[in-house]
Each structure stands twice: as structure tokens, then as C-alpha cells.
Amino acid sequence: MDKQSAHLLVVDDDPVAVDLLQEVLSKEGYDVVTALSGEEAIARGLDNLFDIVITDVRMGDKDGMEVLRSFKKSAPETTVIMITAFGSIETAIEAIRQGAFDYISKPFKLDEIKFTVRRALEQRRLLQENKFYRQELLEKYQFKNVIGRTPQMFEVYKTIAKVADTKSTVLLYGERGTGKEMVARSIHFNSHRNERPFIPVDCASLAETLIESELFGHVRGAFTGALVTKRGLFEEADGGTVFLDEISNLNLSLQTKLLRFLQEHEIKRVGGMESISVDVRVIAATNQLLEPQVKSGRFREDLFDRLNVVFIALPPLRERKEDILLLATYFLRRFSEENHKSISHISPEVLEILTHYSWPGNVRELQHIMERAVILSIHPIILPEDLPGKVFDEFKRTAFPPSEKPLSLKEVEREYVLKVLEEVKGNKKKASEILGIDRTTLYRLLGKE
Image 1 (cartoon, rainbow, N blue to C red):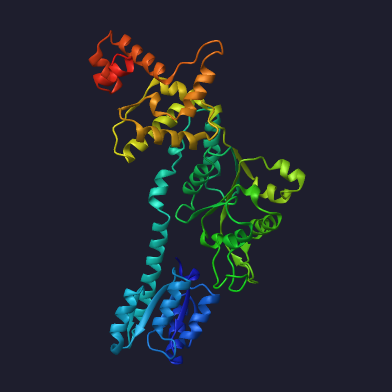
Image 2 (image 1 turned 135 degrees about the vertical axis):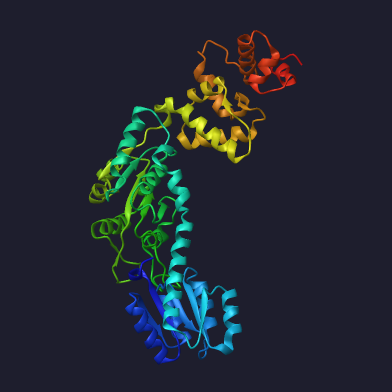
């Protein structure tokens, strides 16, 4: 966090001390507000957002401990530094236990004050980075981890690479489960914004009465229940990216406010008059084309034009079946490692079943099916018995002509075992090793128990 963006509140009932600290810290480049009592400080905290509060411990009716407790309740992200005279060291130690960052003894040295503030801001920066798991996410969302080798996916990769380090808004289109958020994260974490927050917002899940406050924040008293001033997600994402999923669910009023932000790069909190400059890239996503909604008047055409600077369509999994083996293998390795299981292969029959499936839930559904298969499998190879019944039922309907009688799951397993036995010339020991089962299970699958 740089000095220009740091807001400080200095609290002391000694006007000389307050003026001195305001002058010194302002010269350091901080935005400094003062309060001459604990009561005044608590009131300011309800209407303003501070990064750091520096408060004397001993004051009038409401002392520094009450200031600390108030801010920990209303603004837990605010860092509180206590100033204490020698006689109240025990109080200062108790303040640390209750969440104060540090305490400084009177008479304080100005260099010590400046150093402690810098240290507090550095800790806030590190905590923010940890909050968003920057290193882990940077690795997870590298281009190499967006899996697919079909021509449609190569087009997606090329567009991501071209747009990642630009300021352009991006509109993603695809059915549910096609990986829209994965692509949005890949764009963010391969851009110069990757050290700042990526904040996803599901526009379909937020109540219409709350979404404006969630996005843009609110001031105290803006509506019933707005007891304190609150930053919105656009402010929290300053310097980073906001991903608006299912954007077609925004009502026309919110569409107007979003358009104003995209044009002016400023927001106003609900109930507030102040315009706040925010540097945020917007990536939007929808599972239905927006053009029909524009024609019907349910979606603003000018907002659509602003969002649709770069359009990326993600193909459904049924149209990229060549990628099913790649994806299934990736999920197999991932979930085997996470669950400490030694499962190394997917049987050809399982691959055939997966290929015939229509994948209404797309890549997300494949991920869940592979996770289930890994958890349930007792063999080092994924067999048809590890798949959900609905997947196998669809395979039976589509893989066999109507005139043929569909095979049962046991019959498919038996056919597969017979094929393996045929390849190893009837060597049951080898067949058991290939299948990853013992001889008893082999005989059971052959129906020879």
C-alpha cells in the first residue's frame, strides 16, 4: 500500500500532540484526519474508512481501549496503534491481546512513530497478498493450465494471450461449466494486475436489493441496516480485476451505474455524494447471448458495446471431445494426489463411456465425476463401475443400435476383462496386474465365483 492511498486517524485529547502528529505524518505523504476524543474518533470511524488509527490510551469518557474495540467491531481490517504513558503499559499489553498492532510509549520519538506506521502498512500489504493467495494463484492460472488441444481452444488461448496485458474489458460467453471463471482468472494472473485482487461476483446469487451496495459500497445511514460506511467490491479490487459472472442478471438501474463506471472510472457509494476514482478492469461473463436481450430492451445496448470490446466464446465439452482424455487424465492425477491414492490409468471402456456422454455440465461436471471416481475406486485403474449410473445409462442408449440389447454394467466389465485376458493369452496373473485387481476379483468379474 503506497502512502498516497493510506488514510490515518490520529486520536488524542491533547491538541498539541494531535497537531504535531498530523503535521509529521502529512509530510510523510499520508492523508491524516484527527479527533480530540475517543467519542469523536468512534463517530469518524462510522462515516470514514481508515487504514490506520493511532490513538492515545488514556483520554476522557471513551479511552483508547474503547476506540480499539469499536474499530475491531465496525472495521476489523483497520490497523490500530496505541500510544501510552509509562504508567499504562499493562493496558497497552492488554490492547495487543485484543488486536492492536503495536504500542508506542510516551514521550514518543517521531522517527519511531513514522517507522511503526510504515511497518503497519507493510503488514497490511502482505496480509492482503496472502488473502488472495497470489503465488499459488499465479501458478494455478498460467496459460499451460487451461487444458485443451482442439482448434476451438487454440483460438481461445490466442485471444487470452493477446488481451491479458491490455486494459480492455472482456465478455466471455459459454454454457455453465465451460470454464469462464478459469479463463477470467488466467487473463488476470497473466497481466500486470496479477499482484492486485481478483474478485469474482456472481450477479445471479446476490439479492437485487444488496448488489449495488456490494459492488459500490455504502455510507452510514444509506438504508436500514447500514450502520457503518462500507467499501464495495470495486474499491476492494482497486488496481485489480472484477469478474462479473452472469451479468445478464443486472437490472437496468445497475447497468446504468456500471456503464458510468466504465466510462468515467469513478464510483459513488450508495447514499454518498463523493466520486471515488477506482482503477479496476472488468471481465464479464454470460451463459446466454446478450444480443436478444439488447433487442428486447432488457440489456442496455451502450453497456453491451462497452463490455463487448473483446468477445471470447468457450465451446461446450460435447464439441471438443478430443479434449476429454486430456481433461480426465488431469483430474485423475489431481484428485489422486489430493486424496493420497495411487490411481494411474483410465480404462479404455471408461474413456469410451465418457466420450459418448453429452456433458450438460461441461468441464465442471467432468471434474466432479472424476473426483467421485477417484474417491470410490479400489483399484489403480478407473473402471466403469466407478462412474455414476446416469453416465453409463446414456452410454447404453447412444452406443448401441435400438435393435441390439444394451449390455449391463457387469457385462461390460466382463467383456473388458475378457479382452485383457485375450491380449495376455489367458495369463490370469498378468491380467490381474494390468487390471489392478486380485484373482478373486478377476474371477468375480468373469462370473466364476
